[in-house]
Length: 205
Image (cartoon, rainbow, N blue to C red):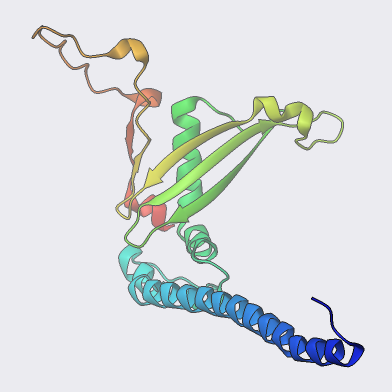
């Protein structure tokens, strides 16, 4: 198809508004998605703030909590729960439980850190990390990443500490043919406990 110069100019003039409309439509759809995400976040934060406010934890742990803002003022729920957990001593309980169970120790050439998350109603879920540091920089780097260890621990609002059950090994299949199952082992104690009972007062300090 061929156009005269006048017809071509007229054709392109009519196409330009279409291009603009497509751009507007695309930007509108993107803005709609962003707005939807913002609204969803606000709804989630609002629902959580009503259920587990600062006052909720004060009543639950029978202690006064200061320096923690309402959940709606944090960028995400985990930041809010982390601030609450610091006030309640949750991290100290998690470190103590992991160190006891796995024989970890502070000091030396190893450093420790923890990351916390929580859903409404609990429990507190904490990932405790241990890694060696570079002797020269005194910081972890690529050369020490092979020493990285991660352990998970769960703490409920009554102060009970539990650990994830280890995955079953391939050779640990149950006996077939109706053979009697071996008697369950005695409840482990000390560092081998799967559940470490802790006084809830310790959590509240």
